[in-house]
Structure formats: structure tokens, C-alpha cells
Length: 258
Image (cartoon, rainbow, N blue to C red):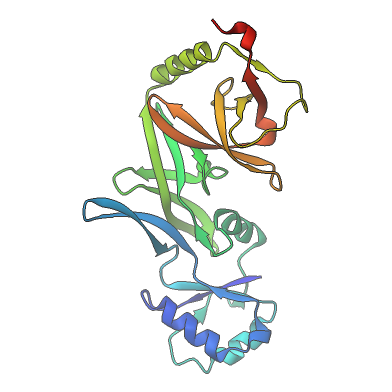
């Protein structure tokens, strides 16, 4: 279970290291600071930096919170565990799943990618792909998506990175789709199981906003039944992640070549 501890903003790392030194390792599974990859521009170029997801907080994964708290009395640094009313409580199972889904194994939220079609944001790859409905505001200049979600027993604002690769009108998007379908008219769908989806191959999208379009495969994750692809949207290359059931293998039909 994940418990949340509050400390002074900017001193999260110092407090975390002190707690790791003072708290017996047998009392907890992990202590960590959730972070996200942010894009920051300096010297005329964009660079990736890691920022704290929740400034002023760190997390402890433990089933022995009383023992952890007892050892934390040795820490000469302001820390306190968040409570639900007067009761010490972990974050809920739904909240933990939400954060776990967003973060990688190092508790870092990677950059997401997407496009804006008319007034709608479509997240095509990254941590926000399954949670784009939680986006309440996009700052394209800072390359940030602002979310408001239920955490710590209240609505909590969260910022994560979102690269908006392209912004188009609905008409422009539909025109582009029609053009792509014409360009790939000499391709044919393969019977299920006839050809394995593999890196360098082509797939046809069979659902969602990119339905009927063709994408080139860049990575296949059979464990999670996902694949990463690359689409070229009006001259801009865009990474898109699909579930296996959202695509079928495709190949060129030589008989249809001019």
C-alpha cells in the first residue's frame, strides 16, 4: 500500500534520504518521489528534465506503517503522513492504479504525444493515452497537459508532459485520411494469422480515430499486446501506440501496381 508523506517543498530528496537511513528496510518495500519528464528550453534547444509530480510529497510502499512511523521519529526533518480525518490511511486502490499506470518502473511519467483535431485532443502515445479524458487544459508553449484528478482524498491538480505534434481542423484531418486511403489502395488485408505483425511491417488500423489508415511498425510488445507505429500526418511524423486488436497486418499487392 502507498502512503503519502508531506515535507517542505524543495526538500523532498533530503527528507527521503534521511528516512531511508533511519527506517529499517524490513518495514517497507520502497520509498520514492514520483516525477515526470518535462521539456525545458535552454541554449535554444529543448531538453528533457525530471520534475516532481507532487512537490512537497514523497511516497512509502509498506504494509507496516506503524513501524515505519515509529522509526521516522528519528528523522530530524519535518515530515508527516497524510491522514483521512484522524486515521492514517494509504491512498485508495484506484488512486494507486492510476499512478502506477502513468509511471514507469522508476516512478517517472514519460512524455506523451498527441494531436489536436478541431477542439478535441487525441493522445497517440504515452502515459496519457488511457487518461486523456482527465486533461482539463493544455499549455502548448510549455508542452504541458494539466489534469485534475482525485488523489489524497481531494481534487488534485497534476502536470505532465504532452507533445502536441500537430493541430488541424476536422476538415483538414478528413481530407488527409482520404488522401492516405488513395495512396494505399494497392495494399491488401491479410487473413488473421497469415503473417505475424513485426517491426518494419505494415498494419491497417481497424478502429478509432485512425480507422482504415496504414501505419509502419516500429516496436512490438507481445507481453502487453501492444505495438508502436509511426504515422506521417501532413508531413509530420507522429508516434502512435495501438493494441493488437486495433490493427491487422497489411502488405502490398503486386498485382495492383501500375
